[in-house]
Length: 477
Picture 1 (spheres, rainbow, N blue to C red):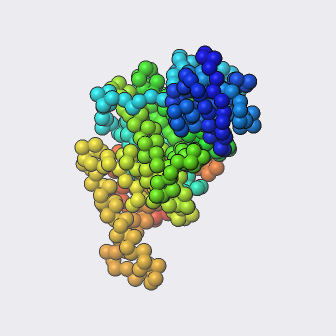
Picture 2: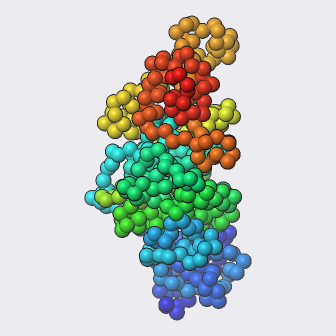
Picture 3: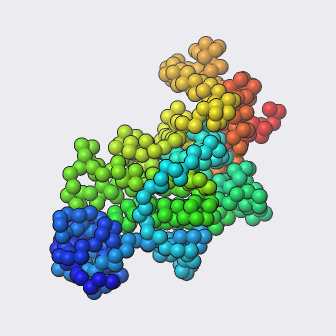
């Protein structure tokens, strides 16, 4: 280690201004206090020829102006390998689950360039989630990205947890195979896949609940969790996502495993970057966010790509501040997504779970070459039915359903049955709802929705279609 000192000349929140008169550090190098090597900061940006903005990675109480710092000449290194599975770590790779040291294959820097285009391939293999409304209206392909949008308390984390349960615990994406203890078991003949979960800026309670749920369902051994919770400073929250990406890239590139990458919440990543930008006195863009928002989103998303021998499929939770999807921090995510799932507070309050707004949810994969001709046609017909029913809602609210014409009444009734059929019981919510979870494969969903659209269930009460799996569960259908 070079013995040339730098000196702290200014502190603003979690931003530390450091001066090096010679042997200036590189961008992303870790600096440590001379008197306390456990106190760390990262060189984040240059302010001038010899001064640098650093972001604090430790508590600020031990840091004051005039202190000397030393450069380690290394960026943050995170442990990678199978030893991270089933473990909870922080941005540095330190264990948070009190289960001892992480067994690692190597330690890698969390910063890396996005892969060359020659090392990226495009997949058309669908990744089934077993959740009807997603597989039908917002299908995911391996190596693709899907965003789950919603305000506070509408079920984003619950939906993500169910997807982890259904896909990672069952990588063949077939109906879940349960042991006697109710835990998922891998198929011996299926290609092994793993999951990496980045908890960025969410509550400690939610992280603990996720850990316990995955543990109880037997899925935890296939998941690596990297947490930078709401209580952490913005530097840690911002960098947590890059630590998680590094672990996912190692599984994809070295261990040749398909990875399901989750981040909850990508908006908190943008928010943390904004907090740091404000403290560095940089000029914001017109919408109030940092001018570097687009490049930060690119640095995150462009590393999450399908490789030649394995892929990273990304599922992102996106918080909507004040339920505003037009917020610039939210809009910055859209260019990178193949599919979107919009959760609605009104639908949630009506008791529909998952509370998906079908007409606001989209997917670039809804074409016959990817999902098949029948699936594509069923989705178009279903969307058309729901749009017609939405236009009839005003009439029904004023004069009642009995005043509709016979044809409009048929449309309205079928739309209600379709919306009810899109509800589903989740495995990870069995303790809360008391109802057994259901996995419904995509082909069954397409077939059943086609039956509803064609009037084969016109004589079935709409209430019987709520919170079921397949329509085979309805006696006599």
